[in-house]
Every structure is written in C-alpha cells, then in structure tokens.
Amino acid sequence: MDNTELMLKELTEASGISGYESEIRAIMRRRFMPLGDLSQDKLGSLICRKKGTDDEPRILIAGHMDEIGFMVKFITADGFLRVVPLGGWPPQNLLAHRVSIETGKGRVLGVIAARPFHMMTEDERKKPLDRKDVFIDIGATSKEEVEAAGVRLGDPIVPVSEFSILKPEKRTYMAKAFDDRIGNAVCISVLENLGGTHPNTVYGVATTQEEVGVRGATTCADCISPDVAIITDVSPTGDLPGMKPEDSTNKIGAGPALVNYDPHMIPNLKLRDLFIDTARELGIPLQQTTLEFGGYDGGPIHMHRQGVPTVVLGVPTRHVHSHNAILRRDDFDNSVKLAVAVIQRLDKKTVAGLAPG
Image: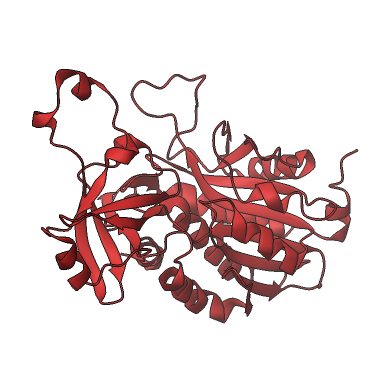
C-alpha cells in the first residue's frame, strides 16, 4: 500500500459513529497536527488553521468524521440487543452484517439479525424488513450474560468491515465509513499540498454528528466565520443495474462530482462556475450531480450569519450507508487537485466577486 492507501485504511477502519467520535478524532488530530494550528469546538469538531500569504479571506474545507451506526437501546431477558440507528440505515443494508459493541470492557462482536426466514408466513416473507424487527445477537442467552460482557445501555455499535483493494490496476477500494472518511482524507491531502503560497487562510475541519443533523458544521462555522466553504463528502452514483440516466449519470472513475442541488442547499453559482472553469483549464474530469434526499454539511454553513458562498465536492461512491462502499482512487486524487487549484485562486478580489449579482 502507498501512503494514501494506508491513510484510507486507518481512517475507515477507525470507530466513530455520531456522538462517539473519540477514536477517529484522535487520528485526525494526529494527522492535522503537522499541518497547522489546531483547535476544537465544544461538540468535538477539529479545526486546523493553515495560514497562507494573508489572514483573509477565510476558506473552510470540511469533511465529517462520524459514520452511521447504532446505540444500545434495550437488552432483552434472553440476551438480545434492541438498538437505535444513528444515521440513515436502509433496511435492505442491515441483515447478517457484523458489528462491534464498544463497551467499557472492550469490543464485543455481534451480528445484525431478525426473525428466521424459514419461520415467517408467506405474507411476512413478501414484506420489506422493518427496522423495528432487527436486533443484534452477541451469542448470549440471558440479559445477565450480556451485562457480564460489559454491554450497557447507550453503548455505541459500529459496523465491522476492513479496508480492501479490489482492483489494484484501477485502484478501486472497498470499506465502511467512506462516508465521510474520504472527505477527511481530502481535507488532509489538500492541506498537505497547499504549501504556504495560497492568498488566504485555510481552515481544514473534521466535523462531528453530520449524520444526525449536521450539528458539528453549525458549531464550527461559529468558530471560523468563513468567507467561503468547500464541503468534501461522498456522492452516490447511478452506475448500478436498474438505474436510469435520468436518475443519475454519476459514476466511479469519471472524476469528482460537483453537487448542483441538495434539499438543504443550492451552491453559490459563481463559486460553482469557478470549480467548473478551473477543472476545464487543468484538464481535470468533473461530473455534476444532484441529491434529492439527504443533505451535506453545507446546509447550515452556507446560512451562517449573512451567508457563506459554499459548494459540495463529492467523491463518487457506490453503496453509501452500508458496511461496504466502493470508490476509485483517481476520483479522490482529482478532488484534491481541483480543491487545491481553486483555493489558490481565492484571493480577496475573487471572493468579493462571489456575491450574487
């Protein structure tokens, strides 16, 4: 593995569901430390300030640390765990996957399960799975066994999945938590590649609790009061069986994706066009996409105070919000290259010109 692959392995295999980001925050703190001055807001978002040739404009580039997971809600008398989902779990992505309960005594392995298929009625087998029917089995037969293992109410539950290289010649990767550890990796790499000649000050941010309400994005914007924001995240793809071009033309390996719309934000059009023009000038492949369900950290940031010109730059990723997402390295590398090139153009005059006409 090269250094980028080792970074992605470390970031994606770390534990860090919404509100329980301590492990991934420690990794991000270590990786941010050589790149700038560190601070942290009171929700736990990390901020790395990298000064260029001027204090202003203030450019925020953010990716969220938290991944989707669960929390222990109830322990049944016969030793099964009922859970609360933290983040959006499609029911079809749940069954038969391994999870780790992060207890005060260490990690306890379990599996997501439901009533046996062979013991359902014909009508029940035809119905889609309801999340309320899901439980976690750690191999116990009583509540006392579960408690003896160290499991308590409120313990976080994290997907278990290792970082894997699927096609070395195409640098295709599979892992949990690409949403949004790939955004964290973009932030780290952008700061590493900027040098000190950018005409602004850049704030690399690893936000908390995006998956449960973009909470860290809200608080970190108060700490920074940015003049421009670039949100780095995954971008779901349409390159799958059964998808139509009108649903999505976004695909892995075809370049980063600029998000033209999500339910909580329409990008600043002049900043959007700066990304498009820069990509064209540098020969960087760039896709454009929309997200009609969900949202990104840009939602609260672009409405901070009097408004912040904001865009979302996504790394196209298959199977987001599951135990195993897939993306390609070229899309990551081109996201970093494009973000660096745009930031180097964001001087005072350019940023002042981003205001809507």
